[in-house]
Length: 237
Image (cartoon, rainbow, N blue to C red; front, top):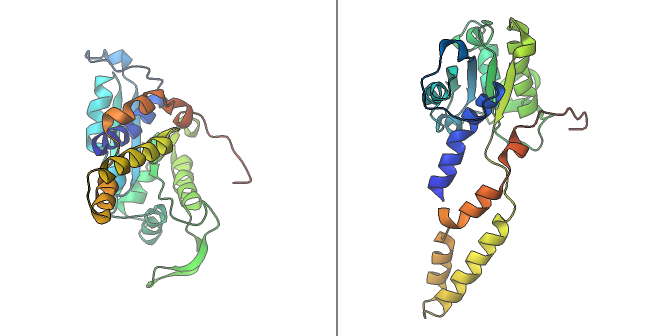
């Protein structure tokens, strides 16, 4: 299951970036020069995004006949507001200069998702030791919006800029039922083996769905429907 999950997560950003230039299939043949379309993307995230191996994405894009330029700003355990805070504190730093250079037409921002809500998480301090000069909204939505505004305001053609939110895959229908069935079958089988309750519970906890068990659900799940639709503004969110 870990291998399957890693593979799906690894493909997320590359698939979304390919969608921006209307890629419908991967081609192994060397592309003609007039076929190459360049996506120039800045990545903001932490090790979760780093695990997708951003520096390998241009190689994958090339195999699809596309040209992808990537520059990643990644911090260990960083939330989106931390990238914004770093750029505010150091306006002449590399991250802000790169973001406002006008050479990028895409951004990938990793959603952290641990706040009570996507917006309106206004506070004067964070953690135990960091104080802001004035109350600040450190929610993912507000922080991502600030990055997007900086990108759009400096873009030569803002109407051609793409922004992608990098996140884990959404829940797939049928997984909860599969997990329940696996637990019930494992408990029944282990109970008949004469093991102690502690041993049974320990082995049940370690029993995870195999790639073979997950494959039918993965194949039936419509990833494009969940991930490639354009964002529809909702003022209530």
